[in-house]
Every structure is written in structure tokens, then in C-alpha cells.
Length: 238
Image (spheres, rainbow, N blue to C red):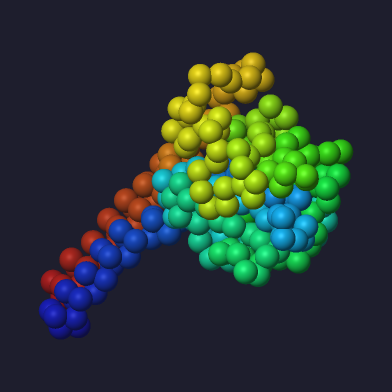
């Protein structure tokens, strides 16, 4: 192998070592959540329903082969969700949505489950006995108040300030922004209690990547890079 070829190989390997950890970022509980549900449609059509996801992390996360289940119906997701960004799944083809689906939501309630590409449950809300927020008459949507807390808490949902909700936008006044600071000073006792029980992903994750996996990746990377550098040095000498 010529010196030029060895140099190119070394550059490629260094590039691979830098890029690979970035592509291994995985989602965990509460990293991506079901953030808003328009279960009642809009003034134009009751079928113009949609579901919004929110990325709680500072990482770009691929949603390829992820699944959103509406009761037992599976919707296969695709594309990516930006850091602290939104992903919109809509039945309205004229809407600026990331994915179009056809399964109708029930005004009486549904169970929504979000699975990653390894079939792990990332978020789940079970409101089959009735939605906790939203208004069918005024077409105000159901918005999550704190995206870092469970969607199965009735007090963690609110009715959108205006009709048609806030698709792919920050939720209405009263919701809590990503860093955990409330837009108002009042929180329910239920939400405060759960927050104190360390359900915030930042307590055990590093930007959507568990600390244990980060340490393992660092050790593996160190060993592999050391072996590669030894091989390159030996090859160049020969």
C-alpha cells in the first residue's frame, strides 16, 4: 500500500470514528412524546384529525421503522424529528404534515402507543374511556402541559387556547417549555409529585442517550481506535 493510500485510509477511519457515535443516538422513555391530539377534526371536516409528536432531546432522531399504534392499528413512521422539534401525523392531505394516515380517531377516546424500531414503547397514552381535554364543539385540541411527564395524567393535558390547536408549534399558554420552566406559576399537585419522582429524562440520560450506553460506546470506541491505529502504524512501517 502506497503512503498516499494509507493516508486516505487513515482519514476515512478517523471520519468514521467521529460520525459513528452520532448515528447511534437512540430514543428512550419520554425522549419523544405524544404532545397534542386533534381528535375532533376542524370546522371544515370532522375527519381532519391529527397527532403531534415532540422531541424532548437535543438530538436529531430517525423515526424510520417506528410505529404509532391507534388502539390496534399500526401506522409506520418515516423520516426524522428535529431536536426539540415536532412531527405531525395527519388525516388531512392538505395539511403540512410529515405523514398522512387514514385511521379515524374516536370522539370517545383511544389508546395511542409509540414504538421505536426495536419495538420498545417510548410513549403511551390510554384514554379509551374518554379524552381528558379538547372540545368537539369549539374544535380546541388536547395539548400536553409538560412533555417530560406521563400522558396518562389527566392534569397533564389542557384544552388549546384557540380552535384548531397548535400543530408543529409550541403549545398554548399554560404548557411547559422543554427546559421545564412553566409559562405560568401554577402546577397541579399530581404533576409536581411525579416531577419529584425523577421522571425527567435528563436525570438518567444524556441528550436522549443513556449514560451506561454512552460509557460502553466510549470504551468500545477507545479499544477499536487503538487497534486500528496500531494496525496503521504497523502497515506504514512495512
